[in-house]
Length: 435
Image 1 (cartoon, rainbow, N blue to C red):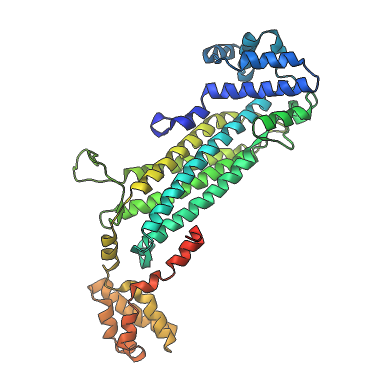
Image 2 (image 1 turned 180 degrees about the vertical axis):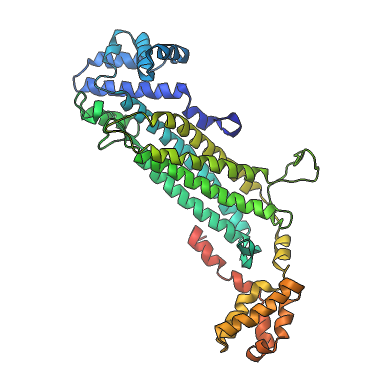
């Protein structure tokens, strides 16, 4: 992952140093269990922890060995033997490479999940604060990009909160599903290693034992994990696109914070571009792209092949690092978002009352006019507003068919903005609970 879209804490999960430290812990915990059931000497297990537990593994040395062996786990074990000495012969007893690789990968994904969940919490906090700030800030709702009916900006943000709250639940579930350990040996039969070793390592590493692992942990778990990250990315893009639209010059109801000294264009000094949310749209595309190869990894040959390995070396770091960065960036956008209520009202009134057309339609039907006729009466007056800039209320008041069914007071009453926001508190209670 490129540094521009990376944050140190998430990056550290995927460094070679972290990976080899996890590999060592898996092997050392397995030795503890093997010693406990009498397969290897207890003193050997203690020596392995003592010699390997406090050293920094030599990445260059491991790479040097791998260039000869063409096998990363063997290269690590060879280097570990150089550190530990003769007792290293008891390391990796009855295990296969996938026991180490898969268990480590899942530990890394669990740790990544914890960081992502922490960022989701920050985003939810920001969305809730801004939603309550603008609970009663009236704005126009749009369908197909066209004015529909009034809503509030707080309701828009409450919707985003509810969506990311669902994302949080999905990620909690994905974390639970990915948190498994396999120490079952070749083809997963435990022929050369006791299942109690797996149970011990799983508990020590904060995982659960995989019920049946063939020789690898089944990749449907990983497919669901990366699919969950992709859904979260899509939710990020949905909110980012909303902000991008609201920042358009013709709309300008909200915009990203523009800091002192910031420049929007190398050619046009007046520009204030939605660069952060445009960036989020691009990052979301990348995270979604990682879901497809994770799906394709599910279908491995028989008990094991390594067609998934190269994929996961890329998508594991890239997907989690990218999503971590995107969540933090979106939180910053929400926290500093500039909101313009006056512009929202001005835009809402741009077409002189058209947003109240449904209320007039319903009033006509309730007064005895057929729905087909009511729709025709209202639409013909609405088109005068679209095409000639007329005032919708005045046109309705001058329409004899409308006036036969509704009095002037009845028509004017249908233009009350407050009617559209009367259930905002109900929506907020559903989203946020009692406040």
